Length: 256
Image 1 (spheres, one colour):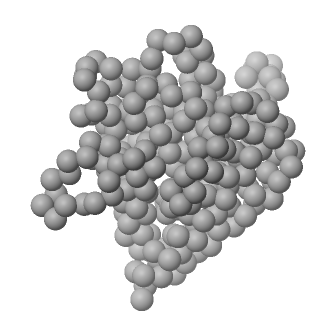
Image 2 (tube, rainbow, N blue to C red):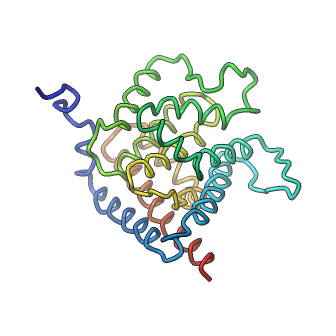
């Protein structure tokens, strides 16, 4: 007997049919594949991944208004930057393997942990760390997101990453550090789906340079119109494509 999960309609099935989405997803995938084929990443991808994770953290924090300066003494006073760097540590090396293992079976646990790590030092009440706001609809949307992340859709990986990102960014489930959490969850989705298996891309570079367009695209996604959702997905795919090119530059620097 076919399970109800597999017989139910795919909630993301129509996204690839939106104008421009499929082509944008193909370009994103091609750029990330090129980065993984780079000679420096065939065996030494760990070095590239660590550099990518650091750049991603600084850019992600900057998107939310934080400083990107890393003091020589290591004493980071900006709590957003400190949180983003702690999140990046969860997405690098052996820690990434552990994070992915949990993500693939219990993504909401990982999302809660990402917030706990990102928002420490920002929220006044430690009990709020990792705990979604008690606002109608948030719990249901998070449950639906978890269903998608654990096999509830056959949508292409760039589309799923865009939806995970868009849901967490616009839903604002925690009310603090949601952007950092959303971008990290998108990176995890790219890794878990095999789109960016070694976490080499730096899409945050694209978003930071186009911050206003990024926020406008998120508003379009939140509006839920076909045009708005398509615009958001295409923007995310363009960021993944640019992130793949950035990964090639990082690899070039390490192989020079």
